[in-house]
View: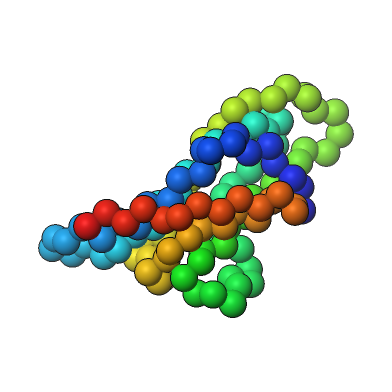
Length: 109
């Protein structure tokens, strides 16, 4: 696993439970991080999920280029969406190679 430079205070999680025809609860998570320009990075659900089903575990999936590449750093916003949400999450934890970050989930009704 590769540690990513997360921008402090940028992890946000919203559980949207607004009613309406055909609507289901959805979890939307965003986080800003500084990554190398050449890296392909995605925010994904961690596997295994963990023992508490109300805490959503996420992690970065990182693909680094082989050979010569740029060392330039770029700040990017990463997004994760789970629709329909698999649980009434209370927290989201972003696993980051020992520097995990947790945030309370904001519920919108």
